[in-house]
Length: 455
Image (cartoon, rainbow, N blue to C red; front, side):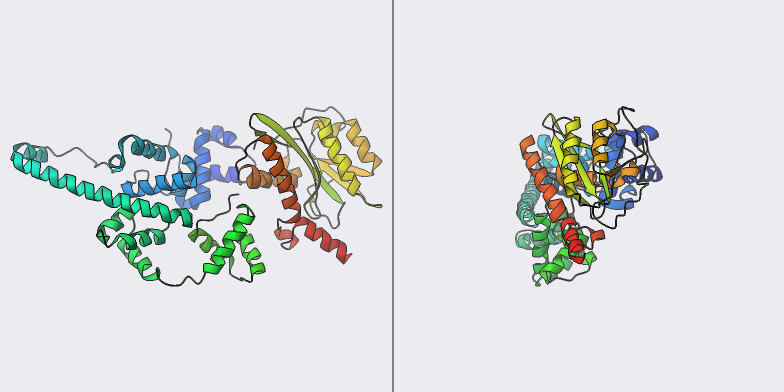
């Protein structure tokens, strides 16, 4: 397998995160596998640049391997997500540990000693008395049984705590050691837990102390689950002000890490361009995405969802003044009616005297004479992106990214009907509840209401 420098990996990650290139395109350009590029991106998101500095030949303890596998089982994380979280160079390493544990038990997770076995030691064993051999074997087996009993007791208590705390932390490991130190030696327990002894004693002194952030953590959990994991620490810090808590966002980030909560957010894009089938409009918008009032600048596009062997197409119209989705249509085929019905719904929002620019890409729907006639009938100026330039329509593309990150990739669906229901709920959530920083932490509808009241 080809080796890639840290610089090459970081450049590949940067190219993907800018949103301009796909995993496949980047992988082909540097001669790497697509799965490698995905792993680099996930590793960077979880560990930052530090994740690429790890020694490829790190030896992992059996306790560390068990922690990794336990995390994957309890959280349902994929092999790639687990490897990124624990800064493991390859998801295949985690897979090997998983198979070894299933087929050969915990002994198979013990790190192998490097180098050839010593011939002298083997010779000594052969010439030593049989009774001594038997005695040594019994002692070794007893020690191994005691060790396994201790590891089993540790893992049982650890699992019970992880179910309530949602993440394996040093504090939790210390708590387990405290509960077991009456049965086993601390020096052995810290080895099983794979934490330094000093770290254990640090937490032992603090376990009985009252947590001054307990109420804040409960409020964080409420906000986090209310928004289904879509809010990061900055938005949660702002939401906490409604509960009477005023803490620095960095403090909230630390508390979220302690309780194992993190924002779950960042497609096959639907390509509607089929050549020139009608009239191409000029790029009137010119990437000027600021609008001083409602019904001044609208943007639209079509995106595709592929679930349960079926496809659904979403066509929304977004007002650039407040980012509100003023109309949308969902259908199982990308026919003209998808865009036509959406446009008919959108024009109902127009008020006398409104002069609107409606911007889109050069998709075939927007080149249709019927579409353009509807625009002319309502004095709407048509604008189109330049061919092959997605940045000309960046706002609606960004909305699709949010939608897929916060809905499609965030939860499981039982059926296509279930997905459509959740999609409808998300559109309402996005308009009425989801705060936007550039709207002074108001939702699009709250901001629109404020504008109308001020007028």
